Image 1 (cartoon, one colour):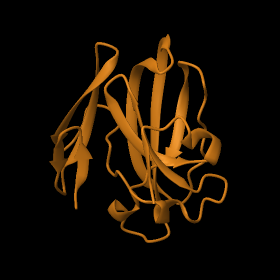
Image 2: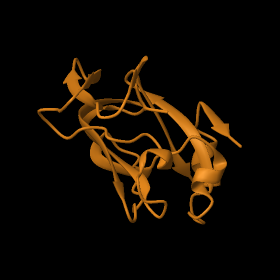
Image 3: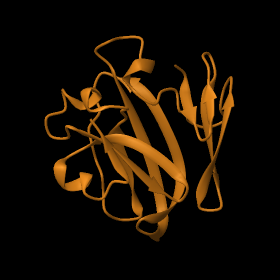
Length: 139
């Protein structure tokens, strides 16, 4: 249990703070963050079973897949509208997951896959087409 924060694990009530650094992010556990925190990394971190963990990555330049990251956050919400752009000047929003079962109710994006960009690893629900670009996918 806890929230994966780079190579560390943040235990409640800590959250993971993502500070933009050299086009990527520096991650650290803290009681609070100056900017939007990463308060979940999958649905198990949400107190309400009907909630999902929705992550947001703001990128502001570079060339895919090495986009410059401006901000990262994640929070539990009742819904998460997946927006996965192909450019490096956009906002990515996706449901975070650890296993295929975490994506079962997202019929458009039923695959839980890991992606790596600019030193940041994120695992989220994607469609079959996007799964081909993943580092790995989880059953």
